[in-house]
Amino acid sequence: MTLLAPPEDAPVLTAHRAGLVGCRGCGRVWPEGTEVCARCGAALVRPDRRSLQAVWAWLAAGMIFYVPANVLPMLKTRTFAGLQGNSEATILGGVVELIRYGNWGIAAIVFLASVVVPIGKFVAIAWLATVAGRPATVEAAHTRLRIYEVVEFIGRWSMIDVFVVAILSALVQLGFVATIHPGPAAVSFALSVAFTMLSAQSFDPRLIWRGLPLRSRRDRTADA
Image (cartoon, rainbow, N blue to C red):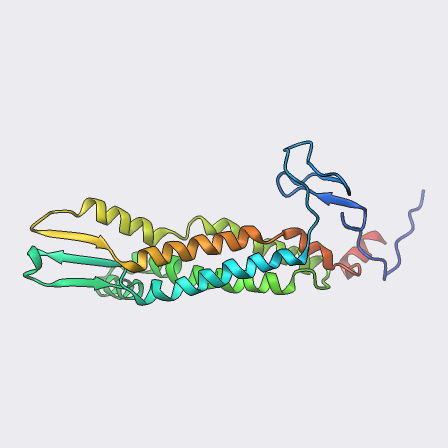
């Protein structure tokens, strides 16, 4: 039996156009009007661009707290009861110190996790929220989905500075000799990471597939 290829301007069939709604918990689709997923018990809610308001709100909060996280000191060190002076180090200041002592690898990890990754997440989430629901080919939609998955995956690894500060504060408590305490930037950085993770979790990836009006050239070739 010969299957006829769909017209070039035929819209791509998505769950929304098929009258289905996907579960954000397990991914199974159900007919529209179903209120609860029978597989995982999660409430079924249709994708709505108004949910992007929460994405932008959490993202703005994360960006606001990221500023003092880089300006204020991350660590406060006191040596010999203050006779040799107290020192404070910001994130970038700590990277510079690591480079000065020859620890290039650790400096690169800290710079990547504390500067490159957070800024990259801000840009990626803002871009996803901007293009969500806009017309796109299937290839573009898959690219957006991969970027979203990367943002979600690396979110849990963004607390490296906070972990280092917590470990040093717990271990280096030598009384008269030396003590290390977390600085105010540690709290700001932790809040920035938490708000950014909430922003990514608030984004509904189903909105990516709401903007597929036409079949891509690759799809048309495969169908033919």
